[in-house]
Every structure is written in C-alpha cells, then in structure tokens.
Image 1 (cartoon, rainbow, N blue to C red):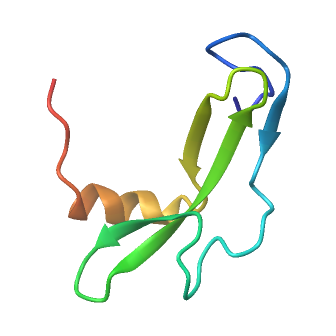
Image 2: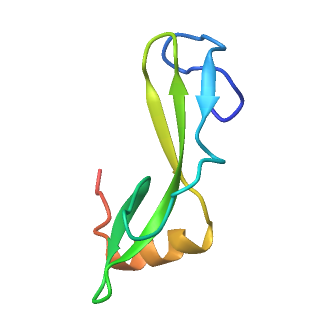
Amino acid sequence: MRKGICPKCNSQEVYSGENISFKKGPYSINTIHMGGVLGSQAALDNYVCCECGYVESYISHPKDLKKISVQWEKVRS
C-alpha cells in the first residue's frame, strides 16, 4: 500500500495518514501500546484503500521496532 496500490483489490485509491497530527500524545490517537512500566507508545502510519476499505498500518519510527521485538511476544509458525 505504501506504493499506492491496494494488495486486496489492486485499486490506486490509496490514501495515507502518514502526515496527520496527533499520532502521539495524551490522547494516544493513531498509536499502539508497546508495554513497559511507563506504557510507551509507537506512532502508526495508516494506509486506507477508499475502494474496498482495506487498511494497513506501519510503525512510524524504525527505532520503535526494536522495543516491540523486546517487549511483545513473537508469533511462532
């Protein structure tokens, strides 16, 4: 979706929330909880297909990926 094409319906009607305000802050809009004592959060960049409604989210800041790999449980196949 980051390249502007929906992987579900192949539409190019993809929109990004990458530059919206309030990704982090007191209201925790557009974030995920990473755990820990202080309850740290990671901002998300969301992509939405306005043709079929499919949504993908990506962590905004690569440094948060390391924190998640330490604090979250790994999914085993």
